[in-house]
Length: 373
Image 1 (spheres, rainbow, N blue to C red):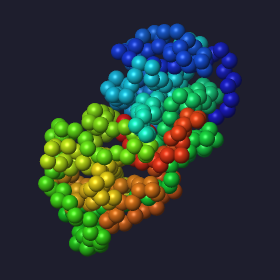
Image 2: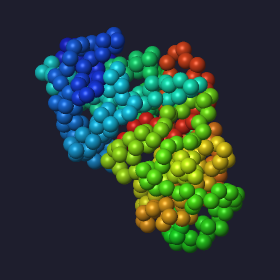
Image 3: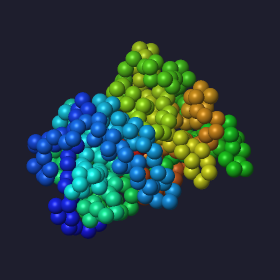
């Protein structure tokens, strides 16, 4: 992307939002431009208009309307339960006329390890105007410097970005495979449903009556009882988190869960509708289950949803469920597993030193900014 050669024509401003105010935090010594910016909602609107002026980065991407960017930034910061007064929200690149020339967003989140919170930032939306392209790399490197205080996560990098993440010592989560669950009734191509039904019966995972306690509305849940292990590094999640996820982004989210007799959520899945090779499907962004339900509980619940579409309120047009997993996860009972080396890459960079650097991670596709798109 080239080095810094724009002289004084371009300046950076760190974004920090709370109660609709944007200002530069004093503890970011790497920020060149200091002082209070021109003001909260006005600057948010300015950023939204800048982003809505961009054409898609590929022929398949469409230019997004202003309302979508407004909604995304509201999800990133205003509605975010992990967004604190001190949380960095991103970096702006301004020309000498103070017009925005580039933007790199940050979405605050918390992870947990050994009972402690690890503040984290998901990288999102790195856009720079062609005339300021030489400053694109310095803009990214400013975000990387935040890794001395925050865990950084990128869940949707393109190929050039992946190479840059490798060079800046991000760690890639182990390569993913994708479990495929055909939805019944229905057929894929000319193959009858009963073919998939017979193929996916083994091994049996029907040890739990998922129909007794099935919920598709989060308001029917009193709280979460997922039995998280303290020695695992993973996203902090509670009911507020799920509410935030379900209301975020421009894509409609699918939620289903299983609650116990005390109305506590013991298992859940979160997904979005996608189309792959002309086949409408549900892509699972996150699946979690209390370990006491068994190591295959999450995949067993997904298989139940695929076989009971009406009970799960799945749209009738869907033909399959895809569940991307990492190497240390062991879902079972799917009809087919597809292997991908870098189809769903997730990169992270922890502060040094950190006790969590060698911790086992539980990874979901919802890490990064995918759930907010």
